[in-house]
Each structure stands twice: as structure tokens, then as C-alpha cells.
Length: 213
Ligand SMILES: N[C@@H](CCC(=O)N[C@@H](CS)C(=O)NCC(=O)O)C(=O)O
Image (cartoon, rainbow, N blue to C red; front, side):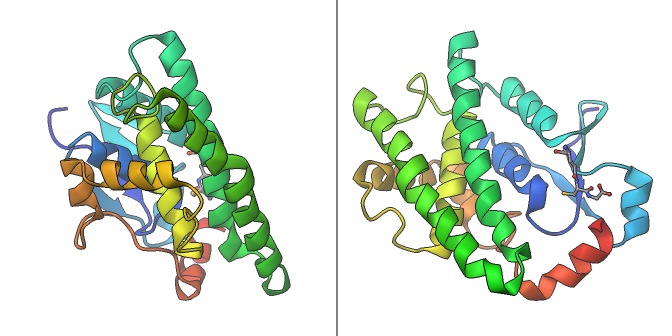
């Protein structure tokens, strides 16, 4: 297949958003087909689904691994790849924790968010601050943009949506954020009108629940 990748998912972030980010960072244009109702999901069986290079790929991690490998965002050898995997999986844990806040019961939301933000500030961000500070390079691994940098920026932005000063105690992450946000493909994706999806609002939940649950 020679055309653009086609992404099948709801018109929301969910599990597709890291795929949108990675394609955008790689400078790859993509089309989107939004599922609107349960029957659309039943036809596809599993989403995210991405049509790419003649394949119909499912499973978020498999899709991300393929894109990262194809566009040289996955390190130069197995050891770099192992580091990138560790960073990406850790960031995915934090990302999921924050994203799940919206579906917590009303009386648990505040406590859940406080726990997620505490983990960001005391467990996750200090690790990345130290990695960048210790090696003094612009990127997390191999002095070159990788999917780990893309995940870190995406996760920082999601945490900042909940706590705008989340990076106050992390000067190295502040410069990292500014630097990576300024890479032309990423800068474009961060501008209004891109295919980046907005933060999920409570009012969007019933429609998504009707599709996925
Ligand atoms: N491991 C799969 C999980 C896929 C998944 O759970 N997708 C959700 C939407 S984000 C879904 O389809 N839920 C409804 C269902 O399983 O019927 C992946 O990462 O792609």
C-alpha cells in the first residue's frame, strides 16, 4: 500500500493518541476514520486499528513498535531499544493513571488525581530529570530523537493539563519540553487544527461509553 496510513478509532484520544503523536513526530501524514457506534467497533473487532503498508494492524504496542522501527525512532541497537522500551513503558503507566481519572467515581476522583500527580512529581519526573541532567544531551537516548522523547513530551503535557505547574521543580524537563515542542513536525502537531485530539471532557463520556462498553 502506498497511500497514507488510515487510523480507525473514535474521535478522541484514548489508545490511538500515542499513535497519532508518533506518526506526527515522524512527519507522516495520516487519514482518520472515526467509529461512531458500537456496530462500527464490532465490524473492526479491535481498535486502535491502523492500515499501514498493506497490513491491518491492531494492538497499540505492536502498531507503535512498527512505526517507531520504520521511522528510525527506536534506537540504533538492542541496548538503546531496551532503554527506550523501559522509558516508554514507564511513561505509559503514568499516562494511563492520569487518563483514567475521568472514569473514577465522583467521590474518588480527587484522591485518584492527587495520587497520580504525586507519582508524577515524586516517582516518574525525577527519573527523567536525572537521566537528561546526567548525560547532558538533548534527547533521552542516543543523542537523537526517539519515541521515548515523544512519549515524555506527550505525558508531560497530559500531566500539565491537570496541574499547570507540574514541572516547576524540574528545570531540565522544562528545557526538554521547550526543545522537543519546537521540533518542526511536533510544533505543527501542537498547533490548533492539527489531528491532535483535545482533552476528554465529562460530556463526551456517554458517547464513548456507548461505543466501547
Ligand atoms: N490491547 C489492546 C486493547 C484494545 C482495547 O481494549 N480497545 C478498547 C478501546 S480503547 C476497546 O475496543 N474496548 C471495547 C471492547 O473491547 O469491546 C490494544 O492495546 O490495542
